[in-house]
Length: 237
Length: 265
Image (cartoon, rainbow over all chains, first blue to last red; front, side):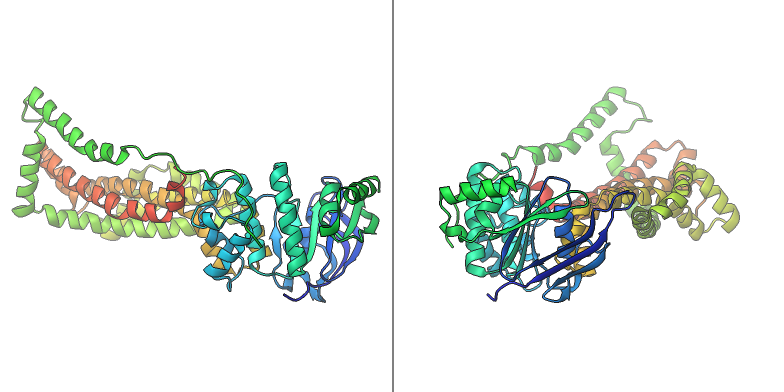
């Protein structure tokens, strides 16, 4: 798979109707192709809004967000992992994965489900899956498209530790083998320390990038000491 | 990449009970209760189901039962199709556009509370005792109920699926197929079921009021002779058609469309 696209984010203003203060004002960032960037900040600061703008879901803003120089809303669909699994309850797990794109065949869907370890549950409906399996199915759907851009919106919220560890391994493995550009929105320093090679810390209102630093050691080579050091570094920034 | 170990067991549906058998027994029990009551009362104004069955057979072979049934069925079917089409279109529009809802919701309220008989009388006065007047009266009575049901369905659409569709760049046809129709279908089926039962009843009342045939018209004639067996024979024939539609058309459609829900049960 080719390396993921580069992103240029320049938001002059994003304001929700009825809101006195803008959610974003004069916000800008550049994301390198094939990087894994964690966007860290407290809840409600606008991280998910930023991700929705990049995904082309939210088009009600002034400014320019481009993906490989194409406007975000016109770019190829990204793989998007929402905070909730967001599976269509009337489709089986395999059919949910197939909705990722018109070209996703049943075989490709099964491969994606196999990557996330739930190919045996392909014929079950979402409500027949446990919460953890639903997350895996959602991840399989995001991966099935082989999108160059993967957007992960707080993917580990309300998951138990064992599943979070497995999701870490799975996402790190996708980043290493497929080389997509990955944006991970989180409020947990540990998520960033485990997966990212760059961390953007947002703070203030409207938010600004208060810290921007690179984590030079690749995720697969980070031992417990490195992770602790990174977490502390991120946490105190 | 190797598959990850499973977390948690899939939540499979529980064991099936003998519900279909109970449903199968339901009508024989009803007939049995009727038969016992008829034997206990032993009165010519309370005929047994056997007597009614025999009368139904006689009216079908020698009388005008089948012709009347066909006439009523045609009127009800046409009114049902028109009411569902118009009501669904209105329901979708006012469910999606809040300004339309604000403008026309009071119209719906008036329509819902307008006595059916008033609509029929008014249309019979304006259009005469015609087929058009009868069908139009039924449609006018039914459309507000369908529109209201569909509006509630559209209002309950999950906005998060719209986000999903936008992120995946689904074209309008795919959105319609994957998101809108599956969310709307339970409400369409609910509107169809309540609509059908209501339309049957309204058609019959309007046929009593003024018509050249049909079940309601014939029942009104039987009433003049206090022929309760004939009335019940016509009513039973009509109920048999309703049951055929319920079990032969509506339920199979429901099973197919709401298959994912039955897996949840």
